[in-house]
Image (cartoon, rainbow over all chains, first blue to last red; front, side, top):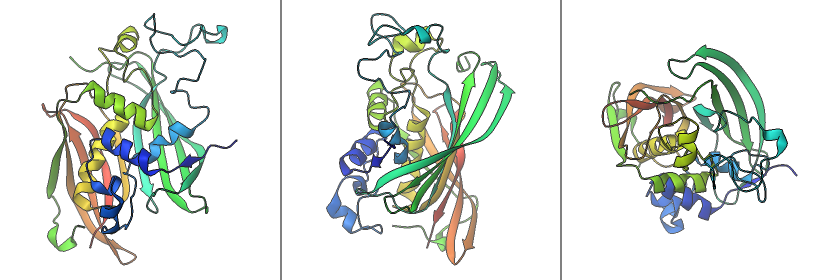
Length: 168
Length: 138
């Protein structure tokens, strides 16, 4: 089944709380009626929560499956580590280097988003602390249930040779 | 309340403290709301085991905090573009201030727009996110 992101007012409220945003347009339908958008809208980075509805998203524990975060041991929990994951990644699965959004129309409760993703550029450079850095760009276009383009997102991820620890 | 072109000038700076003494609990809230459960952000034991000094905030939490400054200033539903690079990690205990500097006031297809340079910094001035935003103005 293709991934679908149903935009719900309760989820918008929880997200706004998480970014410490008390703007009542994210929580109060009566207040929202009197604003320019005229209804509850989502905060500008909310579409990132499509991760919740991405079936094969790697940074969410799957029920009954091995998870790379700590349990008894610092690395690995939830289920025995499957043989194909022996060796594993450097931990953490890469970092987020950049995120860019273009907003084409307001994101509002009741919309159901689908998205199309395509790879962008890839490049490498030598980091000061983290060794070789490999950057990968991806472009995601989010459409509503009527096929209107709502948001275009450009994301850059980076994989590091060593942990990117901050300067002393 | 939207911004008016006549009230803006190039070089003008707007800033807002977007978090104070960031709690681990807020990072957990962000993980739960966004769906990014990478243990690097919430699991101190794991983060140390893979070589970090401890769990650190999602870049997207910093971007979300920065977005709050923008929407509080430019108004609801007024952003047309918003993008950042994550240039330094944010740890529990950090206090962040997000700043927008007016770069250009222009018109496109009859719509007035403001281009902003965006920077979010820690108390000691270290930048954690830098980028740009564009908003519709009156």
